[in-house]
Image (cartoon, rainbow, N blue to C red):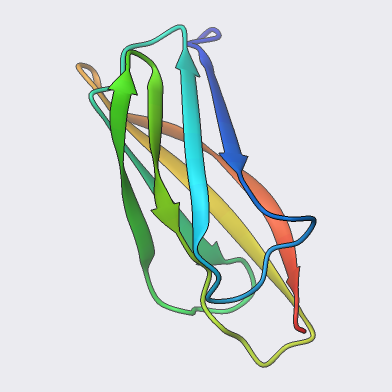
Length: 103
């Protein structure tokens, strides 16, 4: 299977991501048509439950919304942002890994 497109996730944070902080999310999609986009925040090393956020579209290939990561007792919590696109052919997506440092 070849290259099917590009997904860009932009999480607007002031230098760091803090637990329970409301985060503006933007997803740009190039090379395929998505009818719906969701972003899941998943604990990479620990099950912290489902944190799924549906984004809305304001232009073709551009989706936006808000999300937040849960709170954890670890000093550094590894997270994965999983971006799920609904297309005419089914669901596709990618993920982006990041860490949250407890304040």
